[in-house]
Length: 222
Image (tube, rainbow, N blue to C red; front, side):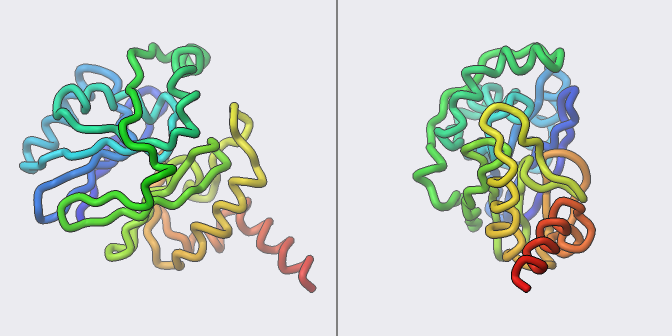
C-alpha cells in the first residue's frame, strides 16, 4: 500500500491518497477547497495512473469534507462517513463561518461507516475502527499489512483532537486512544488529520495527554 499526503485549505488539513499495485485508490478526508487545490489532487491522481473508487472520511468536520463533492462529481465515486456525523455536514456552513472559510455544497453520505467494518479496494483492506470523542461518529482507518493507521483528528503528534466542539467528549477521545489505538502497537505509523506523522510508540512516551492518563491509571491500580 502506498500513501501520499496533500495539505489543503486554510486550516492545513491532511488529505490522503491511498493506493496499491492494482491502481485503485481511495481518498481519505478530502479537504481540497479551491480550483487550485482540486487541480493539484486531480493532477496527482492522473500522474500516478490511479483509479479513485471511494472518498472516505474519518469524521464530518467541514475542513475534512470540502473536497468530497468534487471527487464525487469528477470520478463518480461514493462517499463513506459515519451517519452519527451527518449533523456536521448539515451545520458546515455555520461552522465554516466561525473560521472565516466559505463553505460550498456538502456531500450526501452513500456508505454508512457505522455499518461497514472494513473498506476494500484493489488488494487492500482498511479496517474501520470507531474512535468517538472528537466527534460522535469519528473512526480510524487501519491497514495492518503496512502497519498504518489514519487517525483523523483523534490523535496527533504529541497532542489530541479538540473536544470542545459540538459532539465532542474528552473521556470518549481518551478511551478511544487508550483502548483502540495504543493496542495497535508501538511500530504503527500514525497519519493524522493535521500536522506531521508519528507512531504509536512515540505518542505513548511523549504525548502529554496520553502519558497523564496512563500514569493516573497505573497509580489508581496500585
